[in-house]
Image (cartoon, rainbow over all chains, first blue to last red; front, side, top):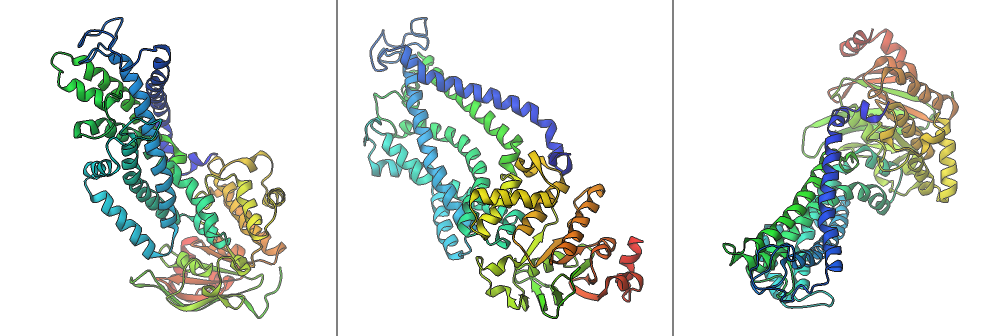
Length: 295
Length: 252
C-alpha cells in the first residue's frame, strides 16, 4: 500500500491529478510557443526590428503578419525580438531574488536568534509596505533610466536593479514562513536529536523542502516582472527606445489604437499567451505537486 | 533481557512544564529509567504524554525540575556532544518523521556520516546492514517515504534511532498511525530491541495492552499529573485509581 493510500488527504488528492497534468502540459506548451518564437523568429527573419520596412500603420498582411507601427517598422519582428529581451530580463529578475531571498529566509527561519529575525523581517516589512511601483521608479531614477551594461540595452540595468532590490523580500518572507512550519515537523525535530549541525539541517533538510514553495512562486513572479517591465515605459522608465520591448510597443500603440489596433493587440496577445501558460503551470504545480507541498 | 542497574540512564525529577506563559500542562513528574529497563506512559489524549516525551528526549526544557541523561542535565548537553545521541525517539506519525526528499538508505546513512564521521560509502554499507536488521532490504532502500507503507516507514524510524547507538528509545505512540496488521510487527521489533540490545525503552501509548506487552512498569497520566504508577501487571490487574480502572475497562 502506498503512502498516498494511507494518509488522509493524500488519497483524496489523487482524482485531481490527471486534469492538472493536462493543465501543466497545456501551460508548458503555451510558454514554449512564446519562448521558441522569441528565440527562432528573429533568427529566421533577419529583418532589423528598427528598420523602416513599409509605410506607417499598415494593417496585418502576409508580408507583415502583425502590421507596421507608427514609423513603418515590422511589428511582428519587433514583438518577438522584444520577447527575447523581456523573457531574459524576467528570468534574470527572478533568479537573483529567488536564490537570495530563499536562503536568507530559511536561515532566518531556522535561527533561534530572535533579534536577527526581528531586524531582517522589519526591514522586509518596510520594503513590502512601501508602494512597489514608487519604490521601483525611485530605484530606476537612482540607477539612471538610460544606464547600460553591455550587452543589455539602455534601461535594462535599472529594471534589473529594481527587481533585485525589491523582490527578494517576498521570497525571504515565504521561505521564513515555510521554515517555521517545517521546524514543527518531526523529521526536523529528529535532526536535533541526532546531533546534526545547524548548517547541515539548513542545507540538507530545510532548503530542499523550502525551494519547491519559493520556486513555484517564482514561476508566477516571472509574469509579474514581464508586466512590470511592460508597465515602466508608461511611467517614464524602463527600456529606452528604440529598443523593441513589449511595454514600449504597447505604449507606442496606445496613441494610435483607434487607427492601428494591431500594434497593441498583437503584443497583448503574445503576453496573454505567456501569462495564461504561466498561470496554468503555477496552478497545476500548487494543486498537484505533492513534493512541492509536502514538507 | 538485562537487569536494571542502580544508576538511572534517564531521570526526570520534579518536572513541570508550561508552553510559554500558558497554564502548566505537566505537574511534578518523576521518572527513572535504568539501563535496559522499560517504562510505559499511559493516558488519554491531552494528558501530557507527548509533552513529557519531548522533555525526556531533550527537545524542550522543563519550566521547573530537570531531566538528566547519564547524570547530565539536558540543558548542558550541546547539539554535537556524543551524549546528545543517548536518547532517540520513534515518532507517532511515521510519514512526517522522515525527510520526504531523502531515500530511506540515505536517511539512515546520514546518521553514520554525522555521528561517526564515516565516509559516504561506509555509511551506506552500514545503513544497509541497519535497515536489514529491521527487515528492509533490496530495492525498497532506494525509495522515498511516500512510496512506502506506514509500517515500513516506522521501521526506518527505528533503524535511524538505532544508528545513533542510543541508551534509550522513547517511542511516542509508535503504532497508533498504523494498520492493525502491522502494529504487532512494530511492537515485536521494539521488544526484540529490548531483549537483544541493551536499550532502555519508554513507551507512550493510550493502549494498556500495548504497554503491558512491552514494559515492566508504567505511569498513568491524567491532566498532566501522574495519578498512579507501578508494575504494569499490577496496574492492569489491580488498578488503585479510578482513572486507571477506566482505562483498563476501556481495553478489556
